[in-house]
Length: 234
Image (cartoon, rainbow, N blue to C red; front, side, top):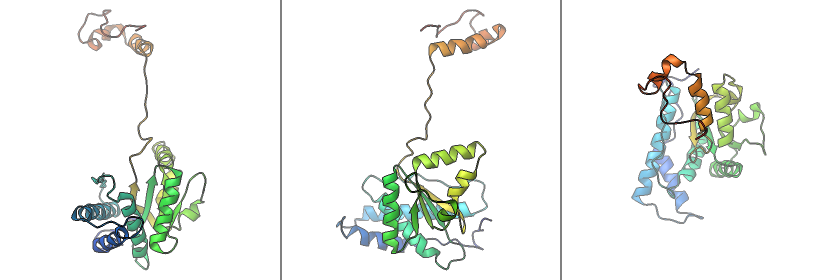
């Protein structure tokens, strides 16, 4: 059952706590960098967008928010996601409306690295990677505040869901305390677009299937039997 905003406020990460933790992370090894106003502004956008998505997903609204983070390379998007996830797990402790997260990375090695970084920031095991080299059962996945999977696993689950086979998606999306209310895709999905090709022969088959009396309309008003543009064999 979804929570209702106002009556059941989700366990949102404090923006100030997030900025403080990111500032500390940025000033220590391996980064050893000064925090600039631009970085603080970018991190502020990240935590604001994440909190907005959570609020949207736990609401009863039919349309749910989603964002593409407008942050440049090197601004700490992945590190920020890890810090946010660790703080989210901390915020969940003892809260009546905890927030689960699903993080999607490009490669298996990335999934392992993200889960390890989250746990290091949290100081305890709150995240786990699930992939072909480290498979978890559905009950094991459900126990972690944060689940990290690969792009391919995400696409496979989404395709199964669209084919009305929701079990694979539900196994990733559900956890022991409800539905994971924040999904973060790290880097653009590599397999989101299917490419199809058609030869002139394929087009000719389609054209020949059109009834003779309709060919004039299809051919932009040309007389029936007169085909312009693509010819078989080209």
